[in-house]
Figure 1 (cartoon, protein in one colour):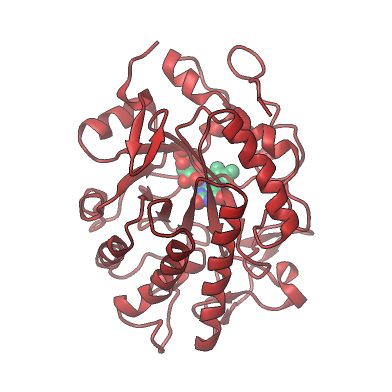
Figure 2 (cartoon, helix red, strand yellow):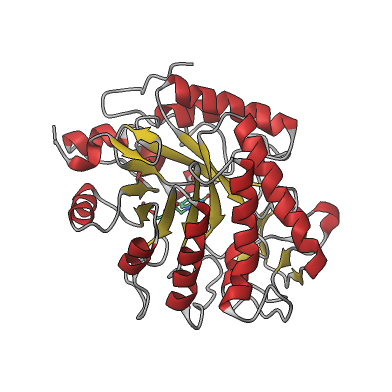
Length: 370
Ligand SMILES: Cc1cc2nc3c(=O)[nH]c(=O)nc-3n(C[C@H](O)[C@H](O)[C@H](O)COP(=O)(O)O)c2cc1C
């Protein structure tokens, strides 16, 4: 058994965590067409409660936010009730869980939108690639640019979703401002061509994301249980080129976030899932130093890498995504050096309990208290 500092208890803000391991948000597309997570999702999350912190799969704040078939929401009472069962199972197993708040923006498709309307975005810039609809993969379409006077309504959707997460019993929320979804579509000048007060200068491009953060922190009585996910260097999904002034943009973003007393920033270092290489000019250590809260590092983490980064002061917590798919007892396996199982890709998105909540631990089924 290792005595790795990564696996020792740690306190960030007022949150006492069992270890520095975070289960990264993982979309699994197993919810109903009404965006209600299944009962067996409580087993799945409960089995993974040995993580210091679980960040839930990305969860739609509204019907308009939906961009992938069978993803969960947090706008209806039925969804909130389902999440309550999941959260209480995680708590019964001594775990801690935040809900990730999501609006996909242009990474959606009319098939998934209310009334079959166009997806919305900062500007009418079409993403590359395909959308995952109920009828399979379909090419993305050119989104509709939001009218200036529609933006407060979306901020309100975030506020309501944050309140609903509290009602469901979550320990906190994470604002999803990464991976080229709606908030990042406003942040980046490759996807934001607006000429109103939400486009143009860095300050203007950050306005909407910061309005969202303000609403969410107000809903949670401050930032102490609110985190945010950022991906300054990623080009996924949709192969969007980076911002023309990436580090200046994200440096200003982090500086502005300090006003809200957020618990953490959760940063994808490199291109999500693909590489930890960072483009010239993007400096994660600088972002970490500028931010006054905790820093969660992500992307291809291993225990060795996490130990090195902790020793060098580069991060406080370390999130693992793909390793959590097939290793519910990841913390135990890291502690003992046991080999990690790998989930075949066809289990990643869609389907039922198979390949989801039926992965055994290294010593057999992982028991879940209810
Ligand atoms: C199946 C799958 C689903 C994902 N879903 C989300 C998500 O809902 N929200 C999010 O911010 N990132 C999501 N990601 C990205 C992961 O959180 C993480 O950033 C990525 O997998 C890199 O970490 P890793 O190398 O430990 O897997 C997903 C990744 C995978 C493989």
